[in-house]
Image (cartoon, rainbow, N blue to C red; front, side, top):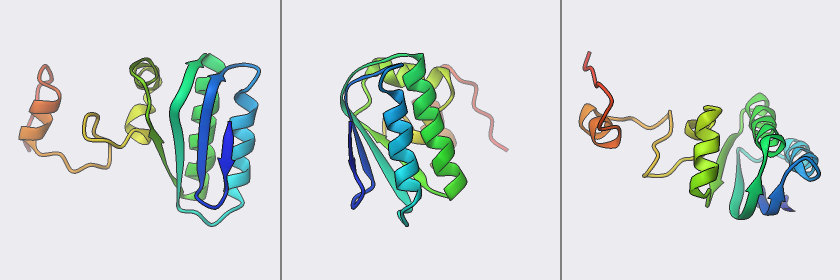
Length: 123
């Protein structure tokens, strides 16, 4: 894991598991002491993440939330996206076109196109 305080970027490398999850939380605490309004978690080099790693990602998000900071995860693989969706964190940290975030202004048409099996109601 690498932390760049100047750009507020945490790069996850290898495995995020019970032995390494504390490093992500330590990096989040270090970033909390800075004035950055957005943090980036780069997961392109992440090869494995267990439940402890997911808890650390959630903990990182909570630390950022308390500071009023936005967290964006880049390069999340399919399995990591599914795991984040399971704990309902995907809409908070994955901000890309394929998977719209909660703060994206969705129209009924785009909602139906994104979630074709969902029932879309217009108010």
